[in-house]
Amino acid sequence: VTATRWWRDAVIYQVYVRSFADGNGDGIGDLLGVRSRLRYLADLGVDAIWLTPFFTSPMADFGYDVADYRDVDPIFGSLSDAKALIDDAHRHGLRVIVDVVPNHTSDRHAWFHAAVAAGPGSAARERYIFRQGKGADGELPPNDWQSVFGGPAWTRLPDGEWYLRLFAPEQPDLNWENPEVHAEFESVLRFWLDLGVDGFRIDVAHGMVKAEGLPDIGHADQVRMLGTEVMPFFDQDGVHEIHRAWRTLLDSYPGERIGVAEAWAPTAQRLANYIRPDELHQAFNFQFLTAPWSADGFRAVIQESLETVGLVGGSSTWVLSNHDVKRHLTRYGGGELGLRRSRAAVLLTLALPGSSYIYQGEELGLPEVLDLPEEFLRDPQRLRNPDHGRDGCRVPIPWADVRPHFGFSLPGIEESWLPMPSSWGPLSVQSQLHDQASTLHLYREALRIRRHRQAFGDAPLAWLDSPEGTLAFSRGDDFVCTVNLTGEPVELPAPGRILLASAEPVARGGAPGAGPIAGGDLVRLAPDSAVWWERD
Ligand code: TEU
Ligand code: CA
Image (cartoon, rainbow, N blue to C red; front, side, top):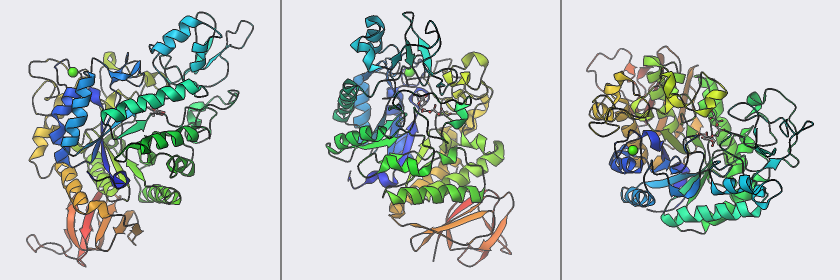
């Protein structure tokens, strides 16, 4: 594999390991399962896979609470399974990115055990953020910070001290003022780089450094402020020093190993700071996770990312779904409407300059599962918003049209860790693979064409005039993408011949069998659809 800035236009597939494929028949996805599906991923046509945390963990936040950064949780397999998966993926031409979780550890990490045991004032407590509480008996939290998952961001130990945890109580925040923490994580990164990984997705990359003195925020609705204002615990300038050090470390390895920031910055400009040339390679652009379905809104999201990222010489990323949000098919209205829009959205994003992330199952047109039985819901985020836990986007992948778990687990196994809707048979990989009208087929075709055109090279995007409610742009001399975001057919002159369409346009007046559409023909774009065109 050549290493010339491969990541700038890579298509990266997010594997939520727990829900991808179960290789040993306990109903939970694992590394063996991922290995057994590498051919599928290679055939899909992605460049890399990102594996969500599979490290030793009590699973209070499904692996985002790490107890041992250098080992694999027995639920997911062993270290040798990880090595075998990395090597196998490389043989399939797929790069491998793993998650690293440096903002917090699990409360069952050896360091936290030591901190609890050693007591107030100990060196062991200096690795975390311990403080005395307020009030006469220190019975009130040290400041007013709220957890991302809801409630105060502090938990009190029986000895009276409080520790900061921006997420669940089982996820104590590390103290990045402590050089030991830096040294430990550099060693962890080396451990996985030596094992052959091609990069890291850095969890909460904006959170490691907290404002001096841990000042109060003085605002009750902190959840609403997240992502729109600079908070004393997020996006502090000090985090960039850490990322610069990590970049130096990454660059000391051959083959362009990358860092991808999961950073929630209040503005696109501040987000671009994470990808300055001496920092990380990519930062997720989460704008499409919330942008409503509209041509003007989408154009603004695209334009803002291209401009801000361009200023630092980086490349954009496009994300429609991930394991933390409602799946986009459902966000876009669900059912037939959601499916039409989802198919259009992926042709749009795959035609843009930059790198695209695909969340497992979106290539099958999976919806959010909204009616999971109460007893299965375990996401800690439900504390904040009981209606919007993240379980519904983490339902296992249907591989075949066989009940009860659609080939996710082994034959004879009764249940997957989350139940799968009984209607998912026709959405399975097996059902879609040979159906030319399927969403899986659309993704495979799009990725094949994209790869053929070498992701359109570095050709910039040029907006073209198009009717209201639509987007049209070219990449280079011969490629055009049009998207109709209205619910009505829209007429325009065909920019060329069709390469691929999420729903076929019709040539006005063209009787069936009148021949293929050519440049200049007046066509009707189907509602909520996108078309890739090749100019003559
Ligand atoms: O997410 C960070 C984060 O801020 C999310 O909680 C996000 O704001 C929210 O889920 C949006 O709905 C990362 C991981 O992606 C997430 O799965 C973890 O729970 C979290 O870090 C803690 O490690
Ligand atoms: Ca398993």
